[in-house]
Image 1 (cartoon, rainbow, N blue to C red):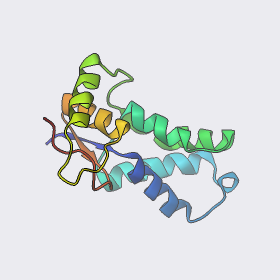
Image 2: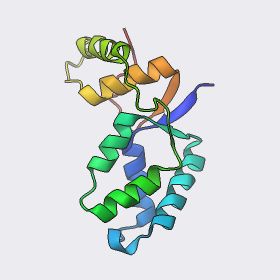
Image 3: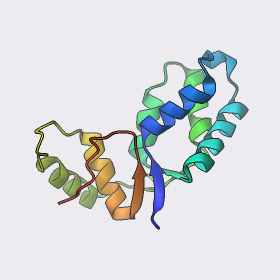
Image 4: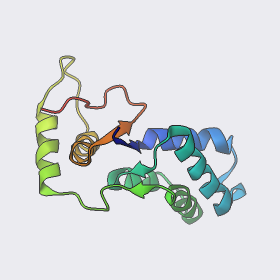
Length: 136
């Protein structure tokens, strides 16, 4: 079975559920790290990708929230190790050029993530129903 990687929406949904509406300043780093490890166990997935890491951190509104995000994500392996290859960009372009039957728009990040997952043989866990699963 392929290694499993999580999408940003899985991370966000879990964070919102476990933080139960707490204000960020009420959460400490140890708690955030515990929640990250909990999510890994729940999803049986220990990886994320560089674009997922960046997207999650970009959603934070203060230095404290960025620190919590880093701590929450620390247990996860960044499967691509920060290396996005020319081959990934080429495959992302091919994915983007494949217009689905419903004609809806594709997202740059989703196409790049799918291309990286194909290269690394990763199963990608997402709540996004429109994520590009088929690769040309």
